[in-house]
Image 1: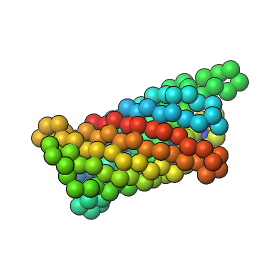
Image 2: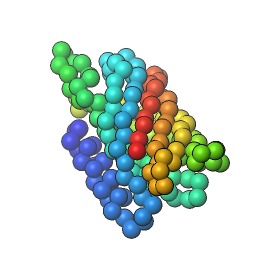
Image 3: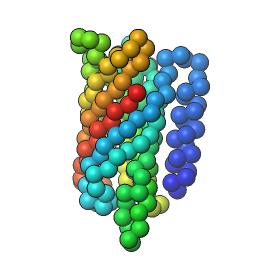
Amino acid sequence: MKKTILSILVVLVLTISFCNDSSTKLYPFLGYASFHDAINLKNSIILGAGINQPIAENLRINLAGGYIPSELKTTGQSMPVFYGYISEELLLPKLCCGATPFLMAGLSVFAYDNKIDNGIEIGLGLYTLTKKSIENKFELKARYNPGDKASDFIAIFSL
């Protein structure tokens, strides 16, 4: 199951990253997550990659996938947890110094031990222009799982 989800995410990332639109952006990210007890995770790092595609002047779609290395504890064993999400980002008016705030909403999934934990994410973030064409993104989001009625906190920094 984990390999299937990871394969689907890789195919989607490669498909969109090789499309003709030069504004499509492939990026690595590093994240921090604080998870609820329903899947027995503690505070963890997330490593991953994603793509960002503008679909209007102030709207972008974001697709990303990553993993949390060996944090899930079931029956005394550690195993990786795969994380993926798709979201829309509404860009707000630019601030000074090339910074652009945004609001985001999307769906996410955690895959671990042949189980899937899906949820709804909402958050906010900031794009900053560090050099002429290099854009960094920082986002804070809350994740809610309607099935478990539990929430999580995720922070992601990407290049």
